[in-house]
Length: 389
Ligand code: SF4
Image 1 (cartoon, protein in one colour):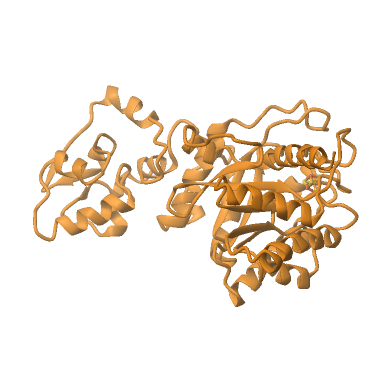
Image 2: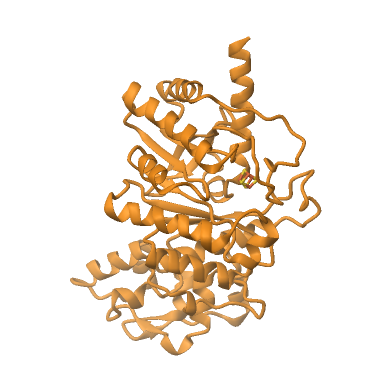
């Protein structure tokens, strides 16, 4: 009976933990992800590899009433909670079978943020101290949690995160009336970032935003992300395209198109790895990224005075601004041109550049390779999943 009860909790709390996932990992790893159970979540690792994590809620009992959430207080659904011992043992079962490489622990807010955080902390203590588990742990910090609890959790985890949900108070009020953007969420993230500065976490600090449920604009979302990378040294900002949940106040709202989430990730990549600032990104009249073209291409088309660049002379910074040339291919170009002059598109292709996209933005030994007007729209619309473009 006890075992049956545990499996029931596991399938329910695993499935509910999957509610706030971003579509991005599933878009990159559609074939690699083998759904052995709802508890297994395919996360993107540091080098872009697929890492299966045991993602679960400690509890889905919640005192808050966020409008979009499957676990909101007023929603009629089964409510269960793991004891720390139950959760630790179940996780180790999966870990020992080599089904997962780490734990991603989160929770709804039962009784108070501190009470729920303490339960998660207890689970971490059992794993680290009783079972001597040394593997990966990502633990969510709940909004409003005491600083001492943040620090105690941080000493046992590899990554901490707190979901900001929205880019500002205006949007947050449309989603989560019980939460305060500056006093609770941003301040909580600041405390986590401050802990990380003093005691660096192996996998850093992250946050997540729900996109498309409120009147949010990509411009405000990416300005916030840029600030978080710069001032809080965040490792990643994740974007989760809104999907309506039955029996919530937002159930009739249209889902956010997955392509919007994808474009946000591409723009985010430009901020983190290509030295773009949020102000350089190009938005439409509503303040959103263009959906039909990737943000680097849109930037280049709006800055044609900076092109064409001569491949044999351009700096690394100039090369990575060329659509179709990523950081890896830019490094290879610099290396190869020390000994050889690059004269042919084929040579560039061999170095990993997407030449059909890059050709109209470059010269090779003084030669320009124009693209016929009629094929430009076709090339511009192509969706490159790989980040290195
Ligand atoms: S605090 Fe809000 S988002 Fe978090 S579980 Fe509760 S209702 Fe859902």
